[in-house]
Image 1 (cartoon, rainbow, N blue to C red):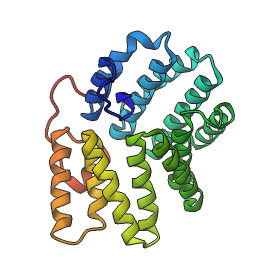
Image 2: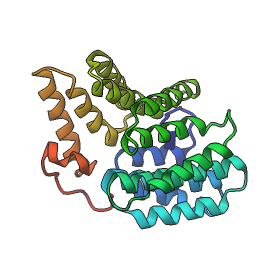
Image 3: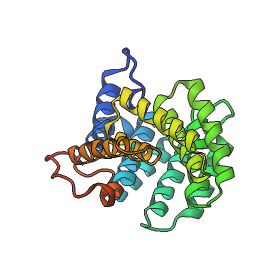
Amino acid sequence: MSGSGTTADDDPPLQTAVWRLRSRACWTDAAALLEPHAGTDAAAALQRTALLTERCLYTGQGWTEAEDALRTAEAVARSDDERGSAASERGHLAYASTLLAVRDRSDEASVALSRSAALLAPASPARPLLDFRRGLIAQNLADSPQSARAAFRRAHAGAAAREDALLLSSTWRHLAALDLREGELAGARQGFAESLRIREELGFLVGTAPALISLAQTAEEPEAARLRAEASRLFRLLGGVPTWLAPYLGPPAPRAAGTD
């Protein structure tokens, strides 16, 4: 669905609207569209939680709103798949809190993702995303690149099989980061280029600046300078998100009222 990063012509109008807002860093507005359904619809509650957690990761703000959305998602979950997906969202929010040094919740993240793995069926559509999130913990919290690579490869294969383009762009990017860490410049460049291509095709503007900066690490001048300049333009256009790009790209322009 559009809220997860695909753009099929027959997407429901609600999902198309959610995707357009999300891709432009308007997570609160996107979540508001789902709020009327989140109290009874597990899928809407999970999607709303994911949006608000993504806002936390990109801006470092909105933790209370994300926690409230997560509790709603956990409350309305009924099946093992829904409960497993809610546990995955809890693990991801705890990961974000730990990564951004808001509060160390690394143990909670690991426990929640393990619970998710126990609840989700092997063929569950939520498995590839769970594998990706386990890879993030291995890569960025546990400093275990081998475990991270294995998890990212599982997620990559699952995303390809399910035609989840946005997740595929993320697995390309993180596998490329592992290649770069190991000095495999050609593999890193290919992965970063594929990630950027997908995000540009989807129109995922908020994720395009990080993809440009990543690719610039593998490019020679003047191409690297061109990529950084384009990343800087998008960063300012979106009002300075992701916030963690600020040290590399300078101060953002003020954001328009009504956006995150």
